[in-house]
Length: 486
Image (cartoon, rainbow, N blue to C red):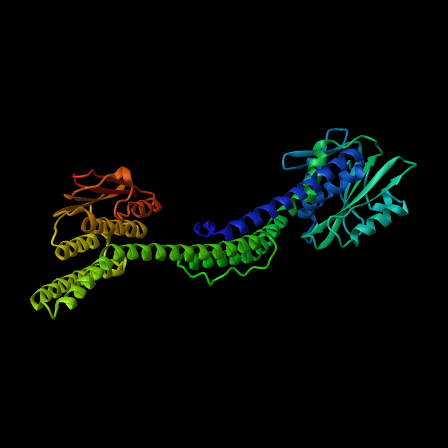
C-alpha cells in the first residue's frame, strides 16, 4: 500500500485530496464563524429559538410519538428545563447551556391544540384558544403543524402585551409533526451570548462537516488521479526516450507539442540528443583519424623503409645477374629476408587493429596476449606481471591497450631492447600500466625522437582523466607509465 505513494501519480493524487478537503473545511468553518458573528451581532431572540428548536423538538418527540402521550414524562421534562421562580428555560447540549430568560410560560400541545403539559400550570390550561385567543396564534400554530421543513418555528409579537410567542413543532423521526411547544417571553433587547451563538452554529454547521469532507476527499481523489495521469504519461515518454539515447539510438525523439514546462523540457532534450549524436559521430571520426595517422606513421617508419630497401636489393641483383650471378643471388636472398620482415610488420599492424573489447576479453587478457605475440614476433624476452585483475570501464581499457601497443611498437623501432617488462596493476582506486625496456633510451628534452608517439599516448590517457610518465636518458632504459583513477 505504501509503495503506491512512492509513485508521482499517487503523490499528486494524495496532495489534491488533502488540498480539496482543507479548502472545503476552511470554507465551512468560515461560514460557521460568519453565522456565529451574525448571531452575536444581531441580538435577536428569534435566532436563539431557531437554533434551540432543533434541540427542543428532538427531546420533546420522545414523549409525543407514542399513541398515548406520556404526560408524566412531559411534565418531568418541563421541570428539568424550567428553573427557579423566574421561569428560565435551560436547553443543554454538548456541555453548552442556552438560557431563555423572562419566560412567561411553556406549554406542550397536541395536534388539536390541547394543552398536554405546561409550566406554570396556573397560567396555561385547556386549549390554545383559552390562553392565546388571538387569531395570529392560531395561524402560527397551524403553520408549524403543516410545515414540511425541519427544523421550523413560527412566531409573532403582541405589541400590546409586549410579548413574543414562539411555536416549535415536535417531529416524529423528522417526518411527521406530532405536536408543538409554545414559549411566551417578554420582549427584550438583550444581546445573545457567545455560548448561544456557538450552540446555534453547531446545530446548523456541524452535521454538514463530515459529508462535505467526504465529498471533498472523493473529488480530490477523482481529479488528482486523472489530472496527474496525463503528466505521468508524458514523463514516461521522456524516460523511454532517454533510455533509447543511452543505448545509442538517437532516432527516438520526444513528441510533446505542449507549451508548458514538460513540453519545453522535451524539446530541449531533443536538441541535446541531436548535439550528442553529432558529438559522438565527430569523436568517432576523430578517433578513426588518429588511428589512421598512427598506422600511417607505423607504415612509414617500418614497412615503407623495408620495402624501399627490398627494391634497392632487387635493382642491384638485376644489374649483376649476368655479370656476377653469385652476387646477384645474395642480393635476392637479402631482398627475400626484407620482404619477410615487411610481412611480419604488416601482420603486427593487422593484429593491433583489433580492439580488446571486440575479442570478448578484458584488458588484462588482451595485454597478456598482445605481449606474448609481440615477444614471439620480434624475438624479444617479455616479462609480464599482473595484479588485481578485474573488469574496468571500456574507455579506460581502450586507452591503456592503445598505449600498450604504442609503447611496444616504440621498443621495436627505437630502443634495440632485448627484454621488456610489462606490468599491469589494478586496485579499487586506480589502474597502472608500465612498459619498461633495457634499450638505448633517448633524450626526453628533445621531444619525440624518431616518431616515438608520446604525444599521442599522453592524449589518450588524459582523455580518460589519467596521467602519463615517461622516463629515459641516452644509453639508459626507457619506462612508460600510464596511471588512471577509477
